[in-house]
Picture: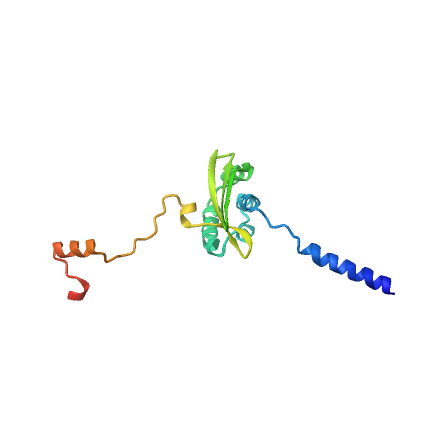
Length: 157
């Protein structure tokens, strides 16, 4: 009986030790998996590879994707995607991928979130000419411009 108990304990300990040795995905693997999910229009899977802050950007991208016709979608799905460069710097990484269909390189930013590499997207990453809305500032130049134009300041109203 003690032999069986020892064997059982040894198997249990081995299982615990080996389960802790699970390999974490590299930035390159995450970038490729993310791009393949986007390629297949599998946005739920793409979200798994992205940061929490990137979720809305993926949602917006899915709206754009829904407007594509079948010919465009087929071209996207057939495209080859390969990693051409990867740079890791602490908890940040940049992976450059090449899309064989468009012959364009795309740089993906990644950050570590809870110990795992995640794609970090912004609106600028999917809308190339996007400029965030301007916020009004009250610096000395704008105050001087108001004075010279005879525009009353908010305090004078």
